[in-house]
Amino acid sequence: MPPNKSPNCISTLLLLFLFSCFLVSTCHGRRIRVTPNSTYHSDNSIVYLWPLPKHFTHGDQILSVSPDLSLTLQGVSSDSSIVQEAFERYRDLIFKSWAHAGSTSEYDVSTVTVLVSSDDETLQFGVDESYTLYLDGKQSGSIVGGATIEANTVYGALRGLETFSQLCVFNYDTKAVEVYNAPWYIQDEPRFAFRGLLLDTARHYLPVKVIKEVIEAMSYTKLNVLHWHIIDEEAFPLEVPSYPKLWKGSYSKQERYAVEDAYDIVDFAKKRGIHVMAETDVPGHAESWGVGYPDLWPSENCTEPLDITKDFTFEVISSILSDMKKIFPFGMFHLGGDEVNTDCWNNTAHVKEWLTNHNMTTKDAYQYFVLKVQQIAIDLNLIPVNWEETFDNFGEKLNPLTVVHNWLGPGVCPKAVAKGFKCIVSNQGVWYLDHLDVPWEKFYTSEPLEGINNTADQKLVLGGEVCMWGETADTSDVQQTIWPRAAAAGEKLWSPLEATAVNNLNQTILPRFQYFRCLLNNRGIAAAPVTNFYARRPPTGVGSCFEQ
Image 1 (cartoon, one colour):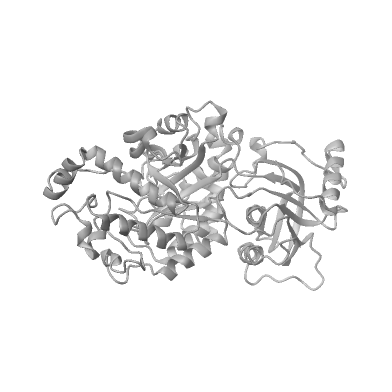
Image 2: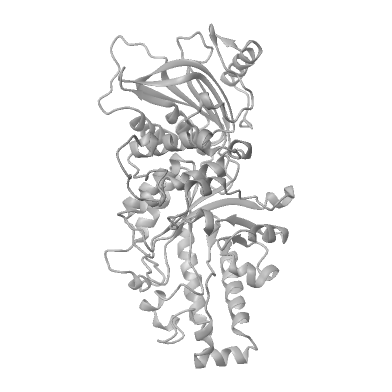
């Protein structure tokens, strides 16, 4: 639905203009193919926008865009640096560095007007990302010329600017930027509030610059949550002020993230409307913690799970969460809880004694650990997210605030939401990017709400996340492993179901997907060919980017 905003003169004129167009299907002497509420057009009229907007109409005109394109900010956020900086970024993407307006040239589009109705720039989960975009030429007799974006929040405006940028195409014959099939009217909003990408920096360190490049590319496909899997059993690269020896578990002193680095990444992401959800995976996957603090290990021969018997273990966890909350303002915090092998608890004398004294099995102790850490997070006003094994093992004993994160396969989210839990979908069979034999088609056709027919239960599915586990990915190949397949899931999570539930992918989706992959390449993102059997591999031969 269009943003719900207070009336203003431009909105009123724009709606009157559109209404007249819908009635006569003709504007300024040019025939417009008006299809109200359409989500995609026939094969001979492919709309090269990714992800596809919720509602749009367009015409058959070609508009010229001025290289001196300017921004006009209106509404209560008329001085928003987030929008101003985003406009400058997109202008640099749209135009060649040498492009300048001629002294006598007239352009159809010389201004982008952005109207934002709220001055609240807090980036919280579920923030309104809807926008309306109208694009027409000022010389055509239109009431509203140029480009106009209306949004309730600056984050909706960012999504509108991305769509506008994709409508702008450089014509090498005229050496000018043009918009085809104008005028455009787009009303857009995401299908799911959580559209995530997991990035693993524990298996291989990724420089801050590379993380920012991934975030930048996420904004192009309207993904909005970076799940930063910072720490794992192999490495602890993050500085924790309360326990400064923890990052002794990094691979080297050069492969670390200072607190300032983390703040920088979060700020960079916010300016692109992207949340950063940090993960501290406990009680398993934590061997690296003991490099700096060996008392966290049950023994030298039992280095994970963490020592459940010591208050020190939970003091460290509490301090880590407290320190990280200052850096990561996102309301959800991932606590892991997966792949916990408790055998060595039984084989460590003092842990076995503790279990006996507390009348616990190792499974009981696993539950005790998970629930205790959940409560620590909740006391810090954080919503706990846990991998699905915690739900599989403990079910309704989990804190009711728990967000269950699926990964092992299909079927978990239907069970979780039926019990009243919220859920995030990341089925490894279709949404794990390190599985190089999973083609883009499976990423695209996976339906997050599969098996969930009750409307109330469907609302408990927050969205989904593609996962870039780092065992075989580092700076040399991480981008081409992520892209373009992550974008296939991105459209599934943003666009309406009826737009993505199509039968012939090769005719309706593949041309658009190849076009978007080329757009990523043109923007400096090393997106691999779409049609390779194995992801991230180079082209198999010569040919056009649009055909690979």
